[in-house]
Image (tube, rainbow, N blue to C red):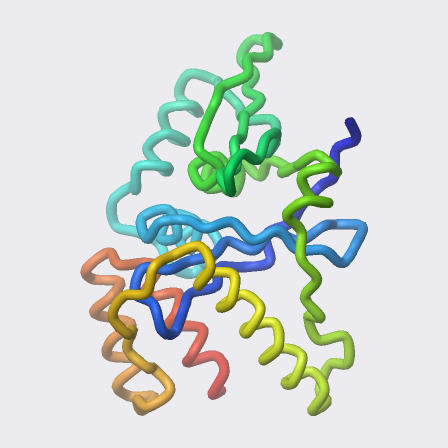
Length: 210
């Protein structure tokens, strides 16, 4: 079976369901996206790795694993999402030490959080992408009204995906109603409290307004 390389497009969070997150992986040589439901802790671990400007004062669990691996010369070479059963993705990490490779089973969210920290490529098999991949338009006409419309349609598709995977819960705060000053204060507080997933969302809202 042929492998398909994936990039991380981002983390989508439901505006109507608390704790609902989808990690969006993008086909490198294609237009399909692979959405994977992840938990809040895993979303935070991935978000902090993506947000290079936010540095935790203490290592998170995945950072600790990276420090431990570095100390003992263990390298994660690549991550492969190798199986999909009943909506659950299964992954393996290909690790190397002293030129000997080992395959370690891992939850997909953990494997990707570590892949980011090791700058390791992420792959899946073509048949998995054929089965679970979706098409997002992704803004092919940058700077036009069509881009905004496509982005809204993409958000609707992801929200629909999340709704089909996760039961409804309480509504999240709408950051769009807050001032920039309030957002800046909340960002500082989120970093202080080590809530880096929330900090990443606040940074996204702040960036949209600047």
